[in-house]
Length: 133
Image (cartoon, rainbow, N blue to C red; front, side, top):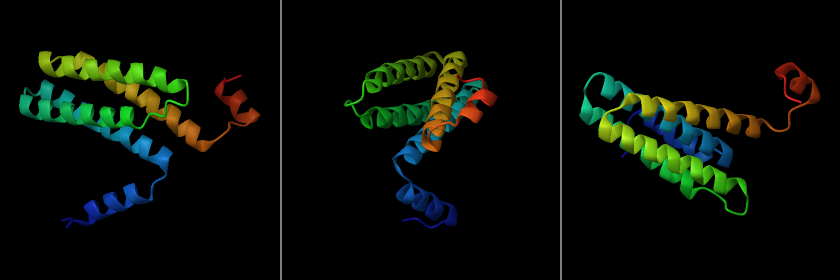
């Protein structure tokens, strides 16, 4: 049962989000849990690290489940997600925060690409300003 206003807000956000927004929410959750795992490793709170990194893995499994293989890019994303899962597992087993930092960097980059995709086509003026041809 949901009691807190924040939990009600979160549930409402998920229920009203479109597909692209849900993907971004998944990336943000994976980033948040991976960072929490890094913090757990740094503070030697290995229970927190383990729990957080496993939650990040679960989110990446959801991203894999959401792939639509009608598009060629899905095969590439699958390879990236499998790499991220491997890095998270290794980071958790070895309590190595460097691998988890690598995962965060990739997730941030992927999330930012999805944000651009959701915004729609980029105008020629925006392309010139951002250096994209």
